[in-house]
Image (tube, rainbow, N blue to C red; front, side):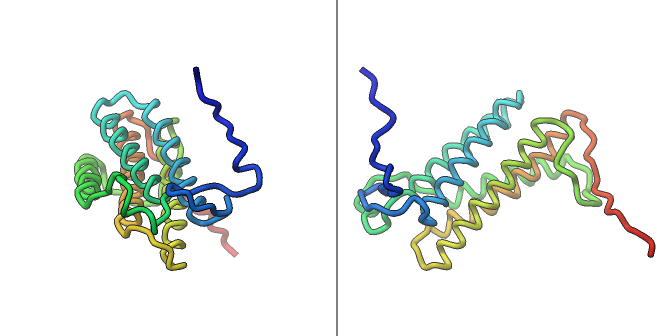
Length: 189
């Protein structure tokens, strides 16, 4: 027997954090982990548009870390120490940095801003980067409101957005898709 997906408990605009604490669905904590979930979905779309086994493995690991971040954000910080939730580690950030450095060594120097287009995988990486930056802004907002957030979450999201930018360039490079430089319109007056 399958379980029903709808519970009707959120019909009044409230939801429960892990631990049972009820908060409005508009709460910054909900906005934060909802945006991380959106990011994870775009990472999945990117994964599905790539054939490189190494990149797919890295993206799979990133999806796992995003679930870790989501569970951290979805948890009532007062009750979290009593729960067995996965942890983000500094080594997760170092792994992103190693991937960024590896790709950067293979790419030509960037001489201008790049338009986010050229191939569906390139564009998807850019969309994921933008959603990642939004998730990071929400998490910084939580920190500024003095709501508990593990500092590694903000650091990871910051590095992940850098990784996604570099990945967009690396995908274009490996697929031999020309990067489209932004040429600002300058009017002579």
